[in-house]
Length: 330
Image (cartoon, rainbow, N blue to C red):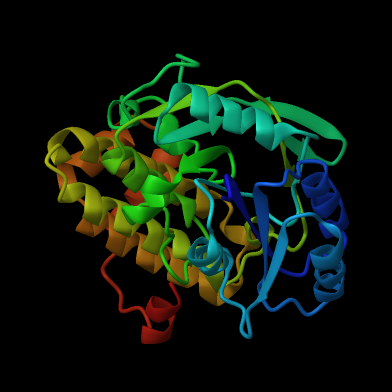
C-alpha cells in the first residue's frame, strides 16, 4: 500500500530540477510515490525527468501534450495518486532529507484531515523562515474557525499547497482538486474551500520545504495576461463563500483579501504589458462593482491611504467595455 503520494509539476526548470529530484531521493521510502508531471516542457527538463524515472525510487513520470499550467498539472497528479496521504512540491523547490517521513509522522499522530507546515523562503542566498499564521501548534483545530479574524493574516492567507500534507479522504470528498486552467492564484480558492469544508487540521513548526523565490520563469515574475487569473481565482472565492451558511461572517475576510491583492497588482502595474495593464484596471473596476458595496468600503477604510487610493480611483472610473478576448484570458 502507498502511504504518501507526492505530486511534482515541472515546466522548463532544467536549471533547478536536479536539486528537486535529488531531494526527493533523499526522502524516498518503499511506500512513497513521487508523481512527476512534465507540463509540456520545451527545454532540457524532459530528459532530466526520464533519467529520474529510472533513478529516483518511487518515481512515476507522466507528460502533458499541451501546457496546462500548475493547477492542471497538479490535478493530473491527483488523478494518479494512490497514497493514504497526498502532498505537493513545485519543480523548482527542494526538501530537507527525511522531511516527508517526519511530516507524515505528525499527521498520523494528530489524526487530522490536513497538516500545515512552516517553510524556508529562498531568495538568492537569503533564507527566511515563513510561519503559518496560526498560534497553536501540534493540536487538532477547526479549519473554519481559522479563517478569521478578517483584519489579520490567517491560515487562508498562507496559500501554499506544498506547505503541508493531506489525508486521502479529502481527495475522495473532492476537496483537493484545483480550479482547472488557472495560471496564477490557483491556491486561493483551494485553501478557502479546504478551510470551509474540512473537519480538522493542525499546524507544525517542522521545517523542510525550501521555496525558491525570484525564479525568472515563474509567473510571479512575468507581467503577461496570465497574471490576470488572480481575478478569476478571487471571484471564485467570493462566489463560493457567499453561498456558505456563515457567509455574513466570512465574506468580509474574503473581500478584504481580494482588495488587498488587487491593490498590490495595481501598485506594480508598470511590469505589465500595456494592453494587460489596461485590462487589469478595467477588470478590477468591474470586480469592485460586483462585490458588496459596504464590504468594499470597509476593506478600503482598513488599508493604508496609498493602497486604498488606487482602488478608490478605480471605483470612480466609468464602466468601460473590456474586449472579449481579455475577459476570456482572465
